[in-house]
Image 1 (cartoon, rainbow, N blue to C red):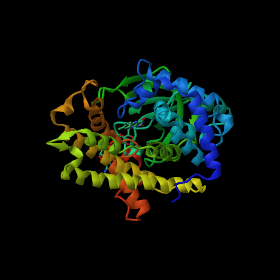
Image 2: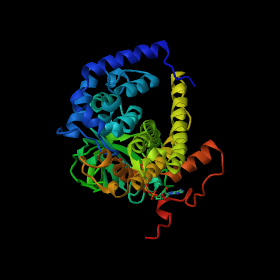
Image 3: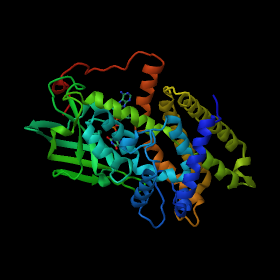
Image 4: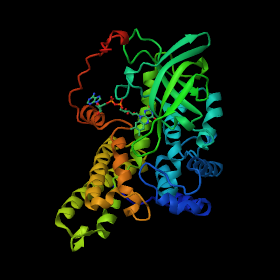
Length: 413
Ligand SMILES: Cc1cc2nc3c(=O)[nH]c(=O)nc-3n(C[C@H](O)[C@H](O)[C@H](O)COP(=O)(O)OP(=O)(O)OC[C@H]3O[C@@H](n4cnc5c(N)ncnc54)[C@H](O)[C@@H]3O)c2cc1C
């Protein structure tokens, strides 16, 4: 591993830092720094509007979607340059949250499967944040087993008519477009009868219902389709080839989510350094120190694993399965740390008033957000299956419905 920039990387870092120092919305620095896990704080400003303003400014100066080709709104930068940019953007990178799905997953899918005219029309406005996109994959019957999805698309002339329901669709309530995977042939094996489209989220027949979460936010939605018409020219990939198209999206999903994952360790360290416990500070207590040592080792392991990916990128190689491992470990560590920090604070942990609550109740937010980290972009169990099968070469999971036509798979309902 090599933690130092090459000469070209250092020059790029200097250029990026200078532009950010001159252009970033510094009035938002304190609010953004005080953001809790899963929630963005932009003070009095509307979070989406503040995010769009920063994104547009970056796009106008050539600092949006760095790795995309210039003609589609990017910079044509290398993966390592993109990582350096993220490091330099720091706290202002939180303003990219609303665009991660569109730019990280829908964009690369459009790049691979849309026609040239569509790429020219949609990608620059996606890069500049003027239009937001969502990913309509999961359903009540298709999550980990995405190929079990039931939303139907039936051909009618030059259009497809879509009926069904999606769920957990992040950002659907403010999205302009989305990519949607549907079943177009129920008589063939489940992976073979799927077709992907991109869709205007304002189309008649789409009903978006935000889901109220335990942390009080509504990050994701139920999305119902009733006779929604999609022109055939908005099909991405061939009819029946939606599974292959979805692989492009999902590979990018793991990269987008796995990239900048937090563990909560620095926040815990800050808490125990200041929190009284008996006559001392919590950090002096042997039981606390033993836990800290364990999490410090794991956080350091994750940092070094990330550095290994960076070294690979810097040499022009593709990182291996580190991203799956990173999310798997970090999600559990974050949840354990949040629980421990809540216990340590005793009754004080339930306070929410930022004036009196420790760190503006940041560990409550972490505790309520961490289960989602262990589910989004592949659950712990699915990531373990991937690591077991593709990294360790262990025998594959049993798949009782393999090869069966979708409409002959017993469903119990
Ligand atoms: C914050 C958040 C944002 C999301 N945003 C989106 C979005 O924008 N668009 C979208 O389409 N989806 C989104 N999702 C949905 C997410 O992709 C699914 O929740 C996830 O894939 C799991 O599917 P599921 O919820 O149907 O659970 P299920 O697949 O029903 O799993 C239930 C349990 O069974 C376990 N399990 C399932 N299969 C196996 C197996 N083969 N072996 C061992 N254990 C197994 C799982 O690990 C889990 O513990 C989001 C989810 C979250 C939490």
